[in-house]
Length: 97
Image (cartoon, rainbow, N blue to C red):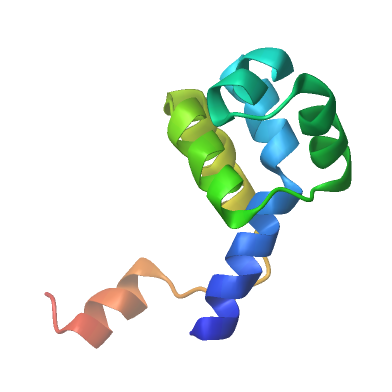
């Protein structure tokens, strides 16, 4: 479970620039809101080198439906190769009629 949390966090950081773009915010606005210079922000965005606190502030700032949809699509892409079961099998396993 811990490895999955770390993997999810790394995935979040790797896509933070895309999330900001999807949310529709300008880099200078986000930089100001999280308390760093626009130049420092641009460098961190390019290198995916935000601190944990900065990532948290960014996510709180940009949280909206478009970002949620983008994240859900990435989760679905990551799980595309996972095995699935049919509805009939699920009903059988759950004891549903």
